[in-house]
Image (cartoon, rainbow, N blue to C red; front, side):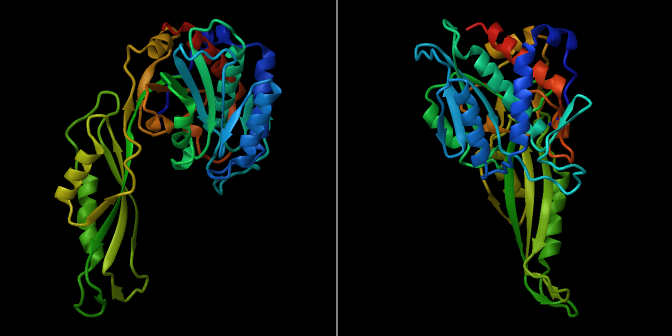
Length: 370
């Protein structure tokens, strides 16, 4: 995701919650950091989230490693807003200089795996949900959902949970955006490509080298530009991200070369249109891994966006995907932290970012005109 503009500190300071809420949110985030929760292995953090909400007298539900709850005075006649973020993490890279599972608070920063992506957003949304939980006569319902497998776009996360949540009108997806509004996301299309040749001895004029065939197609992926450019999301971007052959021997001309194309699609193209263009221009066999993660956008005159603009938030198009791509209703991606820190060694979030995030989430919901 691209970097965002800095949060307006004067606005943020006006809407910050009481100190106890922040201290409790940070304390809970430390517990989450200390509990490994790699994608598909989030059972322990799921239990922590259940216990935390239940300690606040909130009735929770759980399916696999997804935990959710509704506000106390939920009314089916009112519109429903989903507050969602994920509690799974990637695995720490080898460049960490600190223990990724030891939450360290230093110089107004909280270090630890998942602190920025997306623990800060998750605890801020949970705190926001609790702020509204017992309020009567709300204009809307709230559902908080802490979900799994976001980092791997797995099917046992928000995708499998949504049918259980009932009708949802729109949602907030918590990811590190410096509390600016990602109103659109590029879709992700991963294409497996297979170039076929014929095996032969490398010392003789034998075979038909599959690598050379693949190179020609790879050059096309590198140079081709789709003509439609989005004002919010820019052009379609294609990258070759891996390549291998069907043998490892130095003296054999390979009969098959496999490579992978990562395609980030703007809202002006369907996946089917992209695949048609690719197939017309390459000679290799292509096979899409998935067509689930399409591009998304929310109208700029949506009440959620109007409320954000009234709070001095800016909007942008995100080049990365999130669980927003799996939601069949309008959503905005917004949260404390900076996506530039996601997945880096010694990941951290500023404590002030969490404070500002809670306050702005609350004000965002209070300003919505339905």
